[in-house]
Every structure is written in C-alpha cells, then in structure tokens.
Length: 259
Image 1 (tube, rainbow, N blue to C red):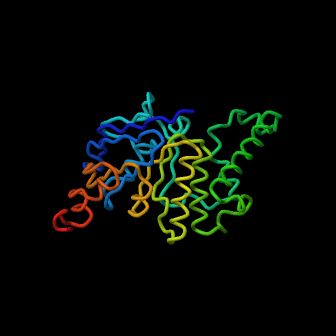
Image 2: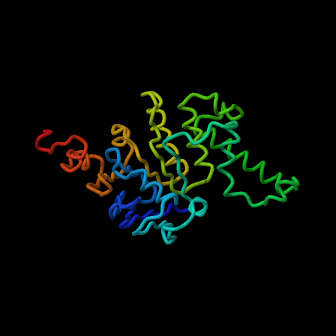
Image 3: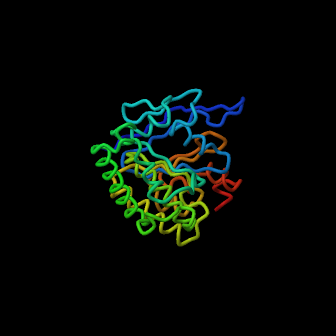
C-alpha cells in the first residue's frame, strides 16, 4: 500500500474568540518523520485534534492524498489510515492483548451478530486479529506482557502499549503526541529507536509533537514550529535550530544574542 501525503492548508481554529491556530499550513511527505514543535500553548495539541477529527477548524483543509479529512468523524479518519497516540495514557484497564484488540476494531468485518453467535467466520477473523496484535506486540517490544494487566506494567511499557494499539489500526500516517513524555533517558532512547524502526518496517509517515529537542533533532526529516497558533518556522532540524524566530520563541532572544 502506498504511503499518502498529509496536507494541512491554512487551518484556523477559534475557541470563544481565542485563536488557537491561525492559518497553519504544512505537508507531511510520504514516508518521513515530521516534528511539530513550539512552546507550551503554541497550538500543537489543537493541531493534532484537528488532524484526528476531535476538533473542527473554522477555516482551512486537511487532506490525505485525495481524501478530505477536514470534517470527518474520528472513526472515519481512522479507517482512512490515520492513527493517533495521546500525551497522557488513555487507559490502564484490561490486559495488553485486550488493549491491542481495541485497535483492530476498524478492520472487523464479521459483524456483531456473527461475533456474538461465534459463527466460524467470526471466530476465524478474531483469531487472525489476535495473531496480528501479537505481531505488533513483538514489533514494539511488549510481547512478553501480552497477557498481563496494563495496570501492572512500568510507565514506559504502558506508553508502548499506547503506541502498539495505534499501530493495530494499520495506519499509513501515525500521529505521536509526546511519545517520550515522562520517560527516563534510557526509555527515551529506546522509544526513539522504536519510532525509526516502525517507520521503516511498516512503511508509514510519522508526525510527532515532542518537547525533547534532542529526540526531534535526531529523528525528524522536517520540523514545523508553532508559536501562539502561528507557524513561525519550517525546515530541516538544522535550519530550524538556527532560525532567529525560533530562538526568540524558546529563549526570548535573537540569533545574534544567542551566539
């Protein structure tokens, strides 16, 4: 399956007169890692909410190749191949297997009745979904916990369950909201390597929001910087790191002063 281009054009979001995003545009090129960064309150989470269908923009468009995602419901966006993790762990209920099987729901074809009656085609489909969930658990390094309650796992492993659940949707575009938040240095390094691996292994594009600038500079092919809801810079990690507007946003200084 080909990897699509995700195109964000002139997206504006307002909440009670407050402009959270102001004409933001960027493109997630197929097969790349693209970082969306900025100070707290810059509009990064709002942008992710637009891309995943949780927030509808006042203006602008979001397209996945020829498909217009702008006003689609979250489940429709998921079926088109966009999956998302959240900054905070969504749930610690059930086992790892239970959580990963939730990510397979968009691929279910048997129907409620067939599943409830355990008809042969439903049983066969359930077995196939469980096998794929275990493969993704292997890929993300949590297979040894497949039957364990999520609540008993370490914080880092719970974050990997969140990632694995998103991958169970078989996305072509993966949105990662602060994937290493709260992790120690070893866990951050392990997660960075995992992101590299899944991008290559599963042939998908990754858009990530992250405050760990070391990780961003190592992983990202392109970086878009937001500040107060506006795009203030865009380019390669090296270009963005030297941009005076970025230095002012993060450090309150000019490039000349910082030098």
